[in-house]
Image 1 (tube, one colour):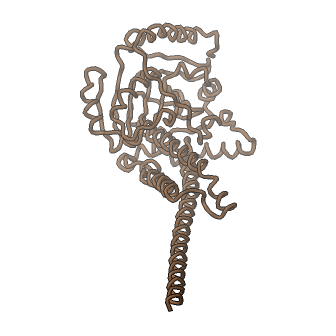
Image 2 (cartoon, rainbow, N blue to C red):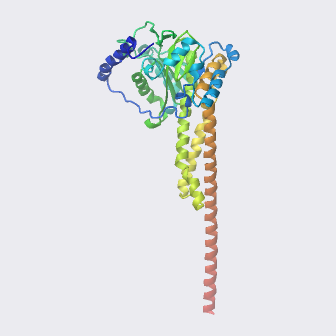
Length: 407
């Protein structure tokens, strides 16, 4: 078992410490502030388990999500998730019991960033092709996703090697290999997924990526999903407690199917925050109507709010690829089971359903504001008509008085 006294732990800790002075001498990087991490996703804290199918044909036999649904029912009865006790493979169960926050600094990272509304894919593709000699890039375009390996060779040459690094977290656990490849998946709708990078390398790549962003998000609005992954053939691939288990680090198509679900999740997190903020900012409007019978805003303010709500609905509904299965799954059906399993772990279907319900609330508010604006317009017209009638009556009275006096 890997404990605080484990030589491996101290060895990795010393490596991390030895890197610190080196990084301090480098030019400082702009560190992004990322305060929100998957707020609507319960699997981050509930130790949820999802098996990733090895062979797509076996998916029907094993059942897609069957294990998850069975555990979820038990967890609801018990009030907590206890899925680790249901893992049948002994090595997998031992590793699941041990893996925790302590190991997140040891295992390779998988990080999803949502930094903007969209990326300029054509310019980005040309830029990556020009970096082939420097960063070993080999970009490939899959519909709305751009994949490439991307290596910071100068930062890794003094500490990393090309040999396999194998460990066991427990004596009777599985043999774990650290992933050595650094892969990037860039999605057109403003999300980038990075596999096998350090935090420093992620920030460096985000700085390079910034020039290709459209509709940039503010630093406090940037969304992030953080996972860790490792390679093992000791048991079936899975996602448990935000640890992703794979069998082949070189299979970028497998990573692509997982990355599609991660990208959708982090983009949905942005939509969730926007909708939550909008509801929070406008929740007092129905109360105003209930107490005063009208909205205490000017016509211009009301029109601006209607425009903002309408833009929010359009932006969410136009991102069909975020809410639905990507077209790649139709072209590569063997990736569909892995994608669906990851999507199930990230609770995307439930979150999309909740998002649509909240959009209905915004739609009702939008309709109410339109009606209020229409009533205000009708009241103004009625006031003008009454004013004109009064003026006409006044003019008539004046004419009558003048006629009487002149007669």
